[in-house]
Image 1 (cartoon, helix red, strand yellow):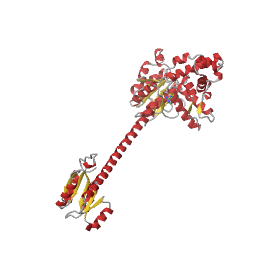
Image 2 (cartoon, rainbow, N blue to C red):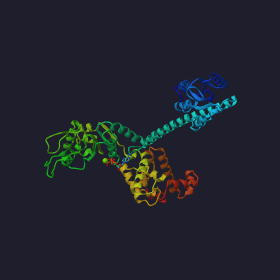
Image 3 (tube, rainbow, N blue to C red):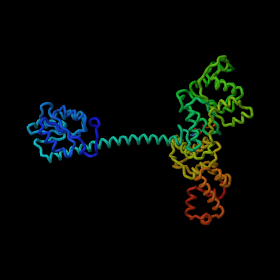
Image 4 (tube, helix red, strand yellow):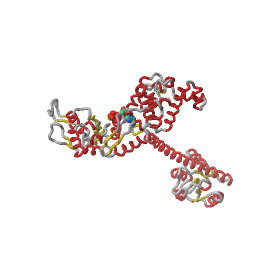
Amino acid sequence: MTGPGAVHPADPDGHGILLVDDEPAILESLELTLTPEHRVFTAGTGEQALEILDKEDIALIIADQVMPGMTGVEILEQVSERSPRTIRMLLTGYADMDSLVRAINEGRIYRYLPKPWDPDELRMNVRRALEAYQLAWENTQLAGALAEANEKLRAENLYLRGEVESRYSFEGVVGDSPAMQRVFDVMKKVSETDATVLLTGETGTGKDVIAKTIHYVGPRKEKRFVAQNCGALPDTLLESELFGHKKGAFTGAHADKEGLFQIADGGTIFLDEIGETEPGMQVRLLRVLQDGEIRPLGSSDTRKVNVRVIAATNKDLEKAVEEGRFRDDLYYRLRVVEIPVPPLRERREDVPALAHHFLDRVAHRMGRELSGFTNAAMDRLCSADWPGNVRELENEIERVVALAGDERMVGVEMLSEHVRGGSAAREGTVAPAIASEPNMALAVEALKRHMIVQSLRDTGNKTRAAERLGIPRQSLQKMIKRLEIRDAEIEGEES
Ligand SMILES: Nc1ncnc2c1ncn2[C@@H]1O[C@H](COP(=O)(O)OP(=O)(O)OP(=O)(O)O)[C@@H](O)[C@H]1O
Ligand SMILES: [Mg+2]
């Protein structure tokens, strides 16, 4: 931009023109030629000219070459430094051809005006110069706007990508159902705190991955995340694993051993299957949670540790407390924040995203081309019951990929028998599946499938089945193909 307070009216005539000449008569005559149309400033010396240049928005400067102080070329040289976009013209007689040629060659002037000048030609040259200035100005404005728009778009893209990613997953934990979105919200909040978290939910729902994610998105991520399955070891061994032991604490304790609580100091310990712990262990855990103190087996000293505890169970802990198998004080300490992870059948909307997630991963690992599922196969995956939850779905996809040939898509025939049958087929009627299906599209598909199979069974041929269904035979044909309804199903072998 030119000097301070630069105003750039869209009209080229609004820009300032600066005339520099030591001869007042010439200045006056130039001014008269240009004034009716333009904003004209005049200066008798180079110094004056530069002062005006600093204050005004000068699009064009016309300087006389021969002057007592600075020459025209010298003035224009300064102008090109102070206001590079101002268009520079030199007014000169033929006598000074040398300096004129040099100035042109060195790119310091835009054009020279011969003395004496023809007023019309002068006006035309000035107009062209102003248009050139205006164009250059508009270009920089546009380039600026473009750069700004690009930057905005880039930021928006990043934001959108983040949005999409966070909509379908949270740091690798996949799920776009409202239920999982709520889980993600809580995960985000608790990850920033040290609060003890209790994860509850059926086997395979993702408690392990959620525990890890809470650790790795939080401020403790630089420190260790350690996990211990509390149901896997007899009490003494579990105690030694968690709290460490002194040499000779028990038969086989040949050396001092650090416990997981110490290893995880500053980090997180994940106590899986917390419901399986014995009463003695429950007391020791209560002490860590209350006082942050551990005592290695065989030692008389206690040590302070700073460990964040995340516990998990697929048992009903509340019931265990009622029945006296689990200490209520420990239970309340553990469930400062409880995150119930819903079973997969209660969030079937997650199945497509999860299935694709596993397919991509496994197909890549096994070098297969499989890139998706047929609609019918996805329907079956979505309507299966998945008692083993996400783990079972993951295993199913692994199995499919391992057994696949050169198929591109996973079709119904590639799924395991029990998945293929779906709950509807198993129960022999579609009604319960529809009643429990929260997703309208899936319920409609299930109903279509049921009606088609039923009328084909009852009528024994497609023409009559189509008549009974009140649809053209071709539509029926298409639906049978799309839903991948096989003869075996119609013959009732699968129900
Ligand atoms: N939301 C999810 N996104 C991606 N993968 C998941 C998700 N939930 C579970 N998984 C995967 O499913 C498998 C089982 O999950 P995980 O081990 O966390 O279940 P769990 O609840 O701890 O089961 P258990 O009670 O049997 O210990 C793992 O391989 C895990 O990576
Ligand atoms: Mg687990």
